[in-house]
Length: 243
Image (cartoon, rainbow, N blue to C red; front, side, top):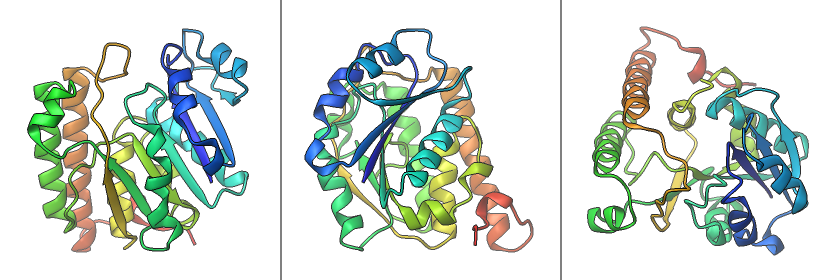
């Protein structure tokens, strides 16, 4: 199992995230820095992380493409993605991967939504909570699933899934995460989730209202493309599989 950390200006939170990862369960940890302007790379190398740097910012999706390609090249059977901004509880990595190890699911999500009260008490802004709920309900209806959250940055993938899903064709921006989930559903892979704590604080990365709105509209557009794909009106490359 390999943990990948898609980093951007994460110098203040990287150490805390790293030390929470259960090293006895992980074979390797890889950090991909997406053109940070702070000391993320310096911190990563100081704590002994394998570090790959993009010479310029490629975007959140572009960062993950590098992460997964590197992990697959290293022979990982399971790839866990954790945002290094300490927004997610990395100590739960073992719980995240167990259903994949047991062969019950292909993709696991760390869901922060158990209740509105808990999400807001954990610092999630109200507009993000409402947007999260709206998009999650819409995605469940369109995809025929019953997940509590689609918008988490704590995920675990089986090698088989990442070898089949054409993630290199996906967006380089934030909607990459939703393309991964929609394409996973389109290819009939199974998805599970566990509950994780909600942790919003000043040092944690978070997109603003404008970018959140763009992200939401992009997600809705991908769902429309998926519906057109399902009724065979339009064949999108992001829902095909790599053989």
